[in-house]
Length: 570
Image (cartoon, rainbow, N blue to C red; front, top):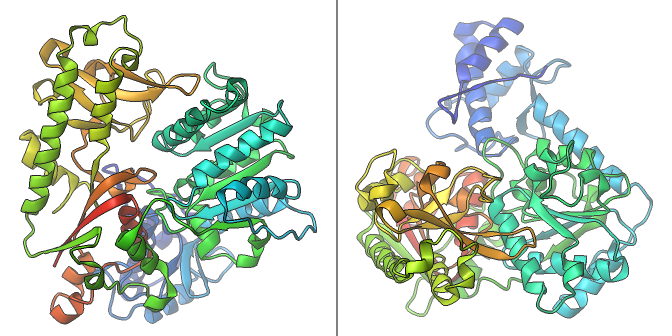
């Protein structure tokens, strides 16, 4: 039995809707069993919202504050007695001490079989590649002589993007007529791929580079029936496809992509299994490397381990989060040993719920820098000339300076709302309530697009900046033309309504990005709820209670290349 549920208030699940359906279809005493069943529904839905389809029932801190004290044994007993698990039409599945909706089990089974069928031969080739940058392109090229599906797993900064671009160029050296597609789940991730493609044009034949088609997964899907002028090929016409940032790709989306590829199309899936799953969906990538039998994809998996992004204590902390040396829970992270004068990691323990004064000072300094750099640009009389297609052509140095400053410091929050949330920071600096009046905000304010706009070439997650005032007020964004070349354009605010301030952004929105300096606001929810009475245990830095919070923390800290400020609420 598959339960279909609906949403209300955009991001909230209607728990009672599911409960009423179950009450109609299964016989149980509501007085004796209802509270336990509601607990299970809440746990499954809450974790599904975070991209976690399987729930470890032995984790005592799954959803703080809603579970009956008799979790999990009494809950499992009642689910079994009422037929909600372990029967033919049961909507819930219990396997190896993990709970999940039946719908996810079916989707996983279908997608897993689809992926396995891509490599249905008896070939057993070793997929180890040379750690040398000069050798590994050659090694991975040889691997695709044996397999139609390869999984490239690696953490942030391990060179995944550079590797896949070089691999495609090598393929085109030997097979110049191949149709090659690159894809990613977000516009931001696609932009990073296009930047890498454009960098190669300096040393590579332009015609060869231009055969690479790079778009979001949704653009490829949209293009299934009618070939768009923006895309060179349909999915069915591709000889090779690379999909980056797989941890952010949901089951249904990747299934649609693969179902529409030619049978002999080679597939390279790329991602980091330790990063976040998509909101309100689930990642097949994270599931493969976390829950499935490792032998299923071991033959066609390449692991990259050496990081070229993070260094010093930032790199040490990122490794500690998932290393076995921390114990089976992976929760206890010793920060004090990393926090010293020479460290590139600064840990600041805060006792108050107000936004830390140190961070406010950092943001003010950064906003002044942005305001100065954008003012120098806006004072040029020709900047707002409508005939200028690409501002880079006329003010390359000033434009470069603006975007260097814009990307120099990233402020990350766990959520949009609540203490230490994005909206709380906006309230301090903008002095406006929603909806924001962008005509009356200062130049230099960072902004973010929240929806894809194909007409303007702006994607969800793209960061821009306010420029001009009154009649000349515009959004300044960097994007790419059809030849994957970077351009900078001015957009009238009336033409792009899905924009929010980006003084700070959520960790989810930052996935796929990087910055020289990153400041993170971490509320340490586990410490503040479950362990508030135990100050000693709080000081042991139990920073996350489950897989979702661990992935979030890891994703946040690995955005930093050189400096990391970690604000933690006691």
